[in-house]
Picture (cartoon, rainbow, N blue to C red):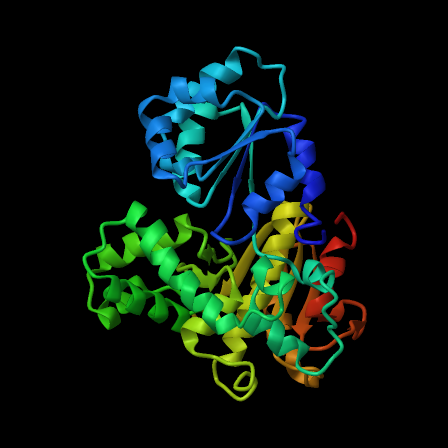
Length: 403
């Protein structure tokens, strides 16, 4: 089975090195099916069932005696009390590896419990949606007409690519309703679900932009404090990511606010009311494409080079680059996402300006300027200029030190 094939070796490797493995990720990213396929000898129990969640929370010792390792516990965030008892069980036999495979959709909740109880005893891995490389493994043809728009609008949820007959609009409509009812009621006390959905759509309208919580709150009619809490909830449930700006003493006044991205462009397109037919003629096309490039870069880095850093650059004089990828030392790739098949000759001008500022300040020792474009092939334009197809981001990042 091709789904999430890239991440399987890492999951196996980590399970052989640590007593416990925690896999986080948004709902419907395929955590359960992937883990059950990989760990067939583990007993499986899901705390999605309220009775089991209550048992695990109120009688964790009894629960772990009933579901002895090796065991795969799904939606483990519903029983935070179990983590202290997992620590005891692990410490009883620290040499036993991969005895507890834990999965959940609330990243922040799980990480708090890990830091409190399982530090040094577990590995943590986040499961994103499918990468473009994995989608290509579903017999999807990137060379056919409309491939790029389909990729953006359909997103990366495995079910939509395992069964192409599923209409994406209906899928995301159901997903949104389930997400609000299940995950958010656990994290937040939301007085009005309608207000939160308006907030979510307002966030979508600001994708690929710097985050202004006060402006967002004002437009939705909520307090800035509430806006901050709701942003944190979206992060906690793996729906959005905040990309931090590049910080260095470059002699310029740098923007300090992070940029907002959705972790799935299909959900983003649905929230924006964007169809495949409208993509390309809408002013929202650029932000959607940039969001797709962000998700692809971040997926590759998290799996292959988590020690590398992803930033964006923007200063008060409006010099900007969509992404800076900092690898070993001060080697930086300066990138822009362009919804274009053949960028104009001056498309590198902004990136040249940013690279010059960083170089003069000593913030970088080597740069490569890259445009991520809507084409099916990549090529060079000089010694340090690259045109890279979005379909080949993984190969591009994997050069010179990648895996």
